Image (cartoon, rainbow, N blue to C red):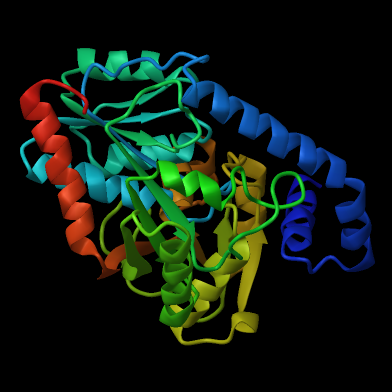
Length: 348
């Protein structure tokens, strides 16, 4: 039931929900107006100093977005953490902790990096500093303005219409004007063609000529086993088992990677960040098809009752790699600025 509601909402946001979607758009128009007013009032309070900002103890780079997901934020956080490590920093990942999967994934990617989650990001940062961090990457921090930051990196997905409706009538938490706060905008794409990403980057530059804009693609990487080691590509029938915000996009990506029509790849979709139960895994395993999952799904399936329910079945993990298409030097400059702030002993 929860998955079907989530699917309908996303179809509604894409204006593909027919007459019911049109009716909902009219009914929720006042709610969107209230959301816009509330967000604007909150931002004005921070801009005027009415709401306090907690100065960070170490330089903080925030990776966020304007929408409620689907921009490739987790791989970008991974990239910045790795770049800060290579530059000589001791980074940490600081998050609110919406989903256990993202925290587990960061810990797998960077086993020596503190990954700290707390609704109060200032408390999470303090814990990260106690654990030895001298710089931090704030996951999904653009709207969390109470914690100060050195840099704001904002992601926009080429697959999402820009500009778009605000919550609850659309996926946007803030509108295009908010990009004036950004130090760097990165346009990402998974299934969209390069031309769509170029067009979106151009639209941002026209609205905010002073804000640097880069582009990056998330492309399929090597197939992996559930535990992280190499694995062959699945053969025969395949089913994508996933609990992410855009499951249809995962199926499309898997089909393209396998060189098959989407109709030849089945989909078992669960709500975003869903914790798989033993019964759910056993049911999917009975389908008799090769199991394909994302890295976020893999870290949850690799442990506990879900792992036992697989009964030794091979699971094929579809990985993603970040490929810079334009403006890699802008991302490098952001890392250099963080390291200068670290050397100066401050956050600016």
